[in-house]
Length: 106
Image 1 (cartoon, helix red, strand yellow):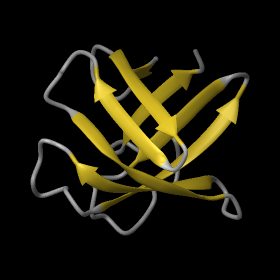
Image 2: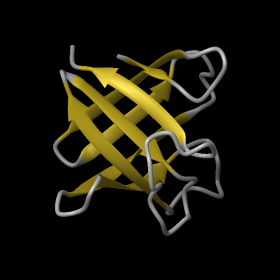
Image 3: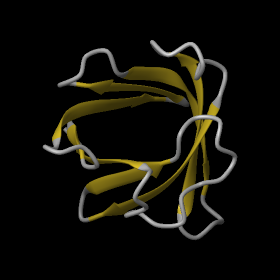
């Protein structure tokens, strides 16, 4: 379980990884969810998460890629991503227009 940071107020979400598949669910706005596959680019600074969206409630995002950056510190995974289809990853974890989630392993 985790939390969506960029919204006010912050709220709960889940992010499940199984192999190379991911399943993100916003626990407050249940109309927001994404499923797909991902790869990690660990030779970049910050490291990048590249998520290909295979299912979601927004038709314009299905088949698109979401570029994100991630870090793992003190048991917390932080992922900050741009809108699907944007070919660039955010430059920083506090980029204003990017989505940011923080997750703790359960």
